[in-house]
Length: 149
Image 1 (cartoon, rainbow, N blue to C red):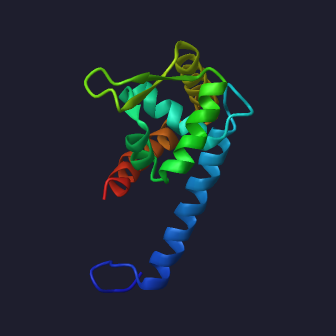
Image 2: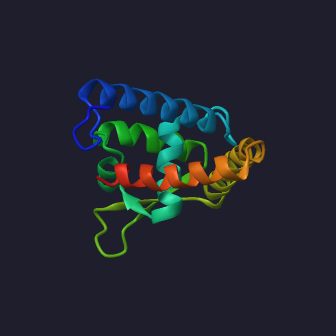
C-alpha cells in the first residue's frame, strides 16, 4: 500500500481487480454448470429466469433487459418456444404487441436449476468455518454494492 491514507496504489488496485474478476468468473462458471437442462445455453436460461422473476415481456423489452439485439432475442425466444419453455400471447390492450411468458414447464426448469445451484453452493459452504462464511457474507454485500454502481 502507498503511505498516503492507506490508499492502494494503481498496481495494487489492478491486481486486486484482476483477482476478483477471475475468482468471480470461476465461481459463476461452476454455478452455471449446475442446471436442470444441460442443453440450455446461459442466454436461454437468463431469458427464462427473467420471465419467471419479472413476468411477461415483449420481445423488445426482453432484448433491452438482456442487452441484445431484437433479432438475437427472437432466435432465443423461438428456440425456447419450440422446446415448450415459453409461450407467446397477443397483448390484451394492443393486439399488435406479443407478450412472451414462461410456461409451467419453463418455470419448473428455472426452479430446479436454482435449487441445484443453491445445493452446490451450500455444499461448498459446508466445508468452511463460521469465520470463513462470515467473510463471504460480507464480501457478497460488498459485491452487490459494486454491481449496483
